[in-house]
Length: 364
Image 1 (cartoon, helix red, strand yellow):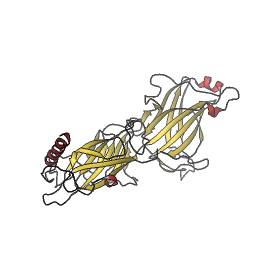
Image 2: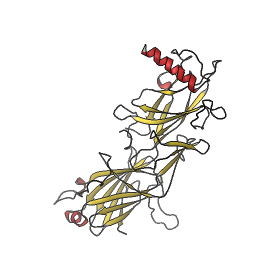
Image 3: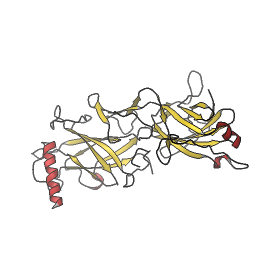
Image 4: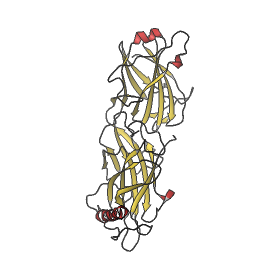
């Protein structure tokens, strides 16, 4: 009974949203079933997804909640109140909660099918987070109305397509591949000695300069070379606790760790915070001056002083990172030294693979 009612409800929805879909009692089978199923994976290998999403296949403990935009016209995804749309296209904005590797039924979208049985292609794009997106620039750009906050992972699944009767089961379902659009910076800290730890005192503030507005070109391909642009004035984004996702240092200060006696300093290194920020285009060095470039600027505040740290990313012991930092994570080790110095060791890695880098910077 429940199954029959579900088919009846879906058929009614099919008729209401897309009049071109055949108005007949829904039955199973490739020739008559108008329902849309989609799958999703995430770029990379290996959390509501405010924190960085590190799975390739969503699961029940780490679901992937996304906005799904569907349209019968390629690259045009405006949400139409009129089911017939503008210039004949039909578009709808809905959502999906991918909880495992199986297909997700879109209750609010169906494949259109003409009365003569001909099929019509439907195009899909996926956006994360699930809410806050609007279309602009002739419906070819998605703009997120909420500023990047430092802990919300922004992802985009480029356009895919499917046809009524063309995707019936298994690996034939259209599959979104979500790509991370931000840069993930992970912060480690250590004091060089007990004397240094005392001289600096507790860490009371940690921010990074970053732009906070994102727009996504819905025509972007899987290469995503120019899929996302970031705008707005640079803002001091806060960092967040590695394990709790609460704002780092908002409630309590951080006590630096330091080696004692013959202890190895790297045994005292502790990863404490992260931030998800706008990517930058990194270069190995300034062409005109030959000087190394600065990709990010951190502001570190302790009980004793405030230091601005310019970070030049490296891709290895002797190789400076170049290229876009999108979908890369960088492990930044802040090594506190005597004399207002902080040594920054940066380990840039793709969301999965790594490299090494280092640099030493002083208080301005």
